[in-house]
Image (cartoon, rainbow, N blue to C red; front, side, top):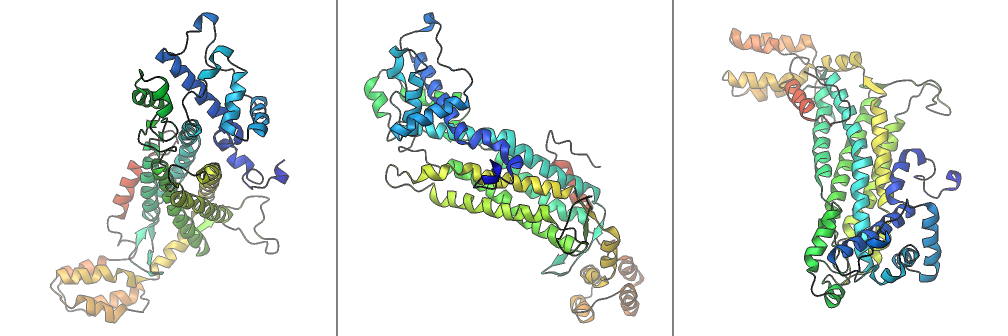
Length: 456
């Protein structure tokens, strides 16, 4: 029952994270390893070393794997205290007795475990995580496109700085996340089938006439994975770590993003939609809290704590192998569950915020000192070598309005063309190529299948 779940992923947030159960639950792990065992048996048949039983109508596959099947394996494991051996014994009840000896033939448990988990990582990425990340990116892309023209007061070191547009502000995150998505989507997961210490010892001893290296390569590739043929008892996890590092970087970028959005809401740059019936505070009825972004920030941190641990732990294993990797790998669904929860919350939050254009313009036009960069550069181009120092003495630590800025321009001993350029400057016009850059990001960041609108 969700009320008694130890983890909030299976309790409070069950509806958000349940899609990952089909890949990382105990049931899924048992099901997938059972399938890998049978796939291996099929591959052995094709080598010719197993008698041909096709005349009896038997094929090395099973009907749909059920909860009852998983429970039977767990019951066997109570005796074996070894989960892969329990799967083997369970399968003996499903296949003809004369081929029992070919089950798990010449393998070590990790040949089955790592292959099943590589499949789970790949399929969960393709079916759950990539669609969620695509929808998140689409929400940023939509927001960026809608506010591509909106002049916006940038801040560096927390201080008013050169203007940009609100669309460009979000476009920076959009471009970063799009690159991350490409890296995640392009990752090819490795798996190994090389025996107890990585040398095919048992297989080579029993059937030296077979090229087991080619067999292993072709078997792993038939499952849509990349074979690693140079291993110990376990797969070196470097390849998986590159995938997790890409997820972790995505989450780190999103922590940065959620904190910025939180600040924009706090400063009145963004306003949140009021949802009928929602309560922002138990005592302050006026509040609309940025709960989606706060929830996301917390879950991104939890996910990254686990992802960081994977990078510190899994590439390290004593000698040929110690068992500490096994229990850590069982938490993959937890790290990805907190990741998925965060991504969905950010997407939801983006649907509930919009620009407060009046407040944005009011703040921008109250800080004419931010165009001093452009003014001193125009003066430099006109031959004034002391332009920076002149502007610094007039603007540093001060807030200028339109009147004070134009009064300073009128006081300068300059030619009419230069004066005209200076007079043409204003905070809402001094945007550089922000709009062009933003449009390019929007054009190049379309995620297929997300229904993102196009902008010209």
